Length: 308
Length: 308
Image 1 (cartoon, rainbow over the protein chains, first blue to last red):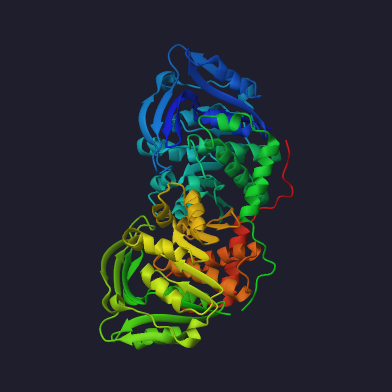
Image 2: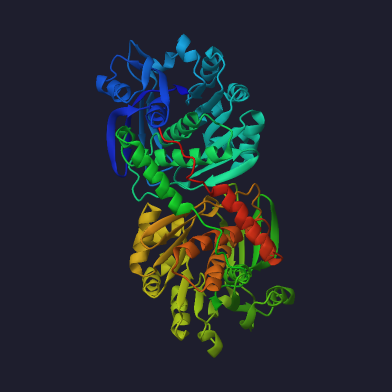
């Protein structure tokens, strides 16, 4: 099975306490693709301007990501300028230049419309719905969103969710979308709107999975240095969706739990370096080795528990 | 083995989004004792005023907590008035009346000075040192602290830590104490100062254990309703220390990891009701059953992982 991902492709300029990057490769669809391709075939649908560096395109195509839906348009590529301070979970947006992304209207090819799994990255929910309408009969529809769309197009987002199987959102987004102060209650409401699987990302505090009316909880991989948190959520979604697509099973709880750990692992590699550098040259052995490492840090054996 | 706990005994008035309590039983030593007594014998050393309700004293003694070091002094009992808003991790202190607690100078009995395990609850670090000096030959010394002492007596606190085996602190405290922005680096520094085991509590985001130069990570038990977070950290420490004291082993990593889960479980029961009500009538079966429940929500089997 292969995944179709639709989302942003960007040139990011990011400053953190650990350094900075300038006009580096970024965007939700890029982080997702570079993460998911470790597990499954991935087709990226996105748009860039004439200024998009050839080297960045090759960074994707040379890693097996299908770019037949990667459009170049007259104008400049989408740019984001951000800064992370002491609180690594709270980026400050200094500038957003939509450029060619403003007029992004994905037109899926016949081949792309037949993908069994689609990830609708964080774009306008009306656009996410348009993409979904072009899909023939997707087995699994997943989506992400962000505060901007929750504020500006809540009705469109809710309408989209009724046709979504897997929802990804961070803690603040889930609370805001449902007007709840408790993240689990927020996940319950989102699930009532459609998605049977809800994944709430909490950055350095881990992630929560709601599946089969039950909550599963996971810590983040412990890192002493986080260089650049940009793209962590999309890297997480890429690992999660990539693993499940390879498994060919989105319902089995053991697979879903392993997918949470793979998401956690991919996000941890991503934040260890600026831009997409933490993901680019990873191999599957390093990923599985960190998966085992994470397991050893959270697994507890019931045996040997003493009774009073 | 039995645990000696020295700390505050308070009458708390707390308001949260879920309700309120007025002059209810509280204090670090109380929460710790009610949690730890599920696993080990506990002796509580603390001070109250003449106004301390007899029913509260009985709530402790009837549950097997040794109150021979529980002093009543002329004057009023320590009071804390606080409020929790939308952000359940950030209490607002409306009033603190130290009352008799201001002149608290614990004088350990011969029997108490021979306890093998001591938990120095969140009081003045100079007082924590005085208590420690009275102990004959404690096998394990654990302590907690708070922002107030980190700001006002950092040198005394650091001096104390050189004689401490197990440090408990929350994320903000650990960062502040070490002037770090990353909580793991903070734990490394605290460990260099003395404690070979460092436990960082992150409230609803779980907890981190540093032991044997390695980090172990745990999520909180998922709760849709948190009525009153007061005492969660001390309930966690009580479960952690109580379990290890019963095990008679503070070095084995499998025991330490299980202790983290028991701490998590005890904290989760505590926050489900106001004051100490969530802890008072618990039995060990309910605790072990939630331990198993938590395990089922975070354990992932390596078997069946697919390779690309």
